[in-house]
Image (cartoon, rainbow, N blue to C red; front, side):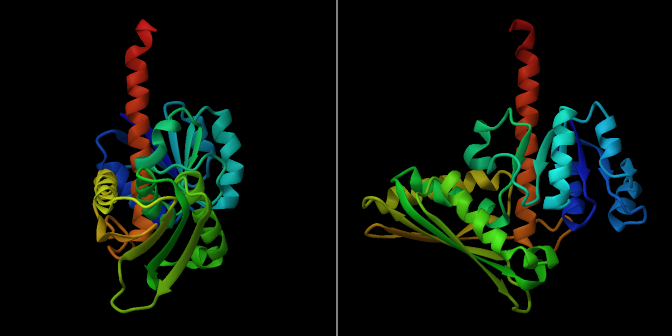
Length: 294
């Protein structure tokens, strides 16, 4: 098993903790924070997980820890990234810092298996880039636009303060990972009661007319690949093709490990983080197995 640690015992870090504990490929060796009496550290300690309120230092000191999830914030990660790199640890960045390349497990993880720092884009990016990529496998994309609608209750202060960064980063991810020539992202905070699950509408303009059945087959295959690590990821409206325009919609329901099930926007980030780590575990183990013959 791959030994890992989590920095940041807040809601995201706690939900991630429960997912890591369920993984057959990962062993959680430490949860690190900076507030001794934080609820996240208390929950971890009650489960028998080693904890520290001394920040990243004790994580760096544990040589056996190979992968570190950073669930803090963009500014802290900018400080953590060079320290983790110097210690030879792989960072999976759940913050908007974007120090390393954008990674969406179902789309481009294979290109970054040897990266020391990978960034998970945004929740909207994790939800929609796979679909944009699936459409792009059939025909080149001139434009991709996504509208991410999330429950207002699932958008904390950090999300609300970084709406501009969300839209800019997601749009960039549509281009860099989704391979759209131009990308645009919009986010809507829906105050409905009871809270709705995350829903994402995807509009794509392809450079040539294409077969609707071919588009549907590619999208459905991609949905199945994402469901390998995000079980609540579903195709809500099958792709509709009209000329050069493709429209579809997906929804994301959370697993309810710690966060509410309507918080699919948060759940997809933690699920993607575990998906990345499990692929790294396979890669590292396979590399060890072939090393004697290298």
